[in-house]
Image 1 (cartoon, rainbow, N blue to C red):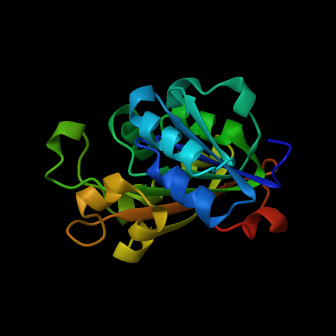
Image 2: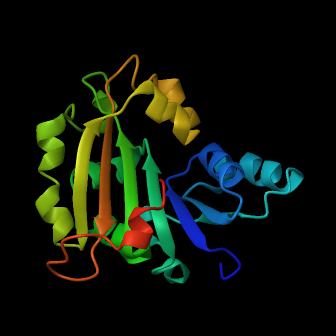
Length: 203
């Protein structure tokens, strides 16, 4: 990690294609994909080796038990279309999930989350989400040191830019509504603004 001026963690990376896209787009940034299922990331890992994307790393870990080696390393954390326990943790601001996100972020680091839950997703056990519900995450996130800066509808262009194959498969932003949540980790209680150098880093 010391060889790279910035680090991005893609949590719940799935097949890891978003990691490959981010690593290719910004070669000087180390992009770490984290997912509980090793098999899903194996193809992306092999492609990274073949493509000589030396600025990639894949870590097998659950969002509820992120390795301590990742503490405070990330300038950017992305969570693109999570599912299962990670989706529930994000949407309900579960303290374990939110604390884990905050723990891997540097002070001032940026967080970008893309989510989509509609009435067709009954298997998720979650109700359809809207802007009002997502704004309700502000207080529990602040308790863990994360300040939400925006809740906006995600466009098809937003989804395409992530390189997320799951987002594309869902038809998020075109065939179904999707939302983007942006936040940063505060330097301490009451910190009003993220550090300039981290705020300028694109997600």
